[in-house]
Every structure is written in structure tokens, then in C-alpha cells.
Length: 167
Image (cartoon, rainbow, N blue to C red; front, top):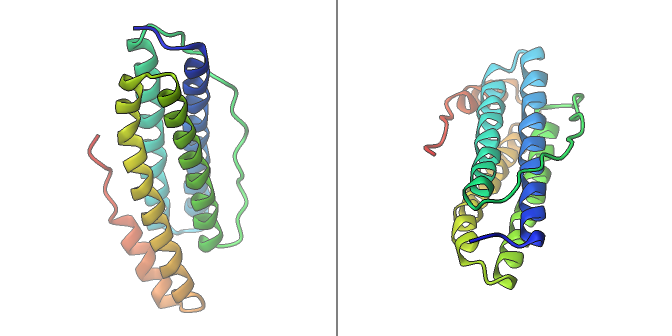
């Protein structure tokens, strides 16, 4: 059961997007580490690890389907941020971009009548709902804590309690 060229190309692009997210979250973790926000750093490090796992799921899927993996180039991530809030806002923008890309993949798979890929993508669609919600919730909390050092330290501690998702 071979994949169409259009779907193969789009899945390879998604691998690049997931690795770009991995790289971006690693940079965000580095920003937090450099600024002594250990909990936020842990959150972003965990997120980075998850994005790498997502990329590898697409990688393995292409191989399982007998397609050629073609890893695209990725850009250097942003490394300078103004605040924890700006980092999480950048994270949400990135997650929305990934969601749009996965939705596009789903549409392509449907148009190609490739129901195995439709099934494969369902997990990612559900995952993106969770991703956007968790980042959005943290943004709301950061906005409420703005200017309150104690609240920011509590949010940093809370962020550090995040555990990796079960794959």
C-alpha cells in the first residue's frame, strides 16, 4: 500500500515541522535555564522531547508505508525573548501552525482516499487540541500573575511538575 507523492511530500514536510518545533522548544528551555526559571525550562524541555517523538512517529509511518523519508532543512530557532509570557505566546503560535499543517495533511489523506493515513493522523489531531489548551491555559495564568513575583514563582513551580505524556 504505497502513499501518493502528494501525501509523501506533505508527511516529509511534517517531519521537518515537528523537528523545527523540537528545536524551538529546546531554545525556549535554554532561555528559561539562562534566566533561572527551572520549572518553565523543564516544561519546555519536556515539550521538546515530545516534538521529537512526534517527528519520529511520522518518520516510522513513512517507512512502514514503503515511502522514502526526505528530511527537510530546519531553521535556527528564536533564542531571545522578553518574558515567560512571550515564550508561551511564541509556543502557542507554533502549536497553531502545527495544528493547521496536520489538518492539511488530514485533508490530503482524505482526498487521496488513504484511510490508513487518516487513521494515523487522528491521534495527532487530538494531541493538538491538548497542546493548544495546555499552552493557552498557561498564558492565561501568566497574564493574571503579571507583576506578581510570588505568583510567577508559583507558576514556575507548577510548570516544573508537568510530566511527559504517555506515548
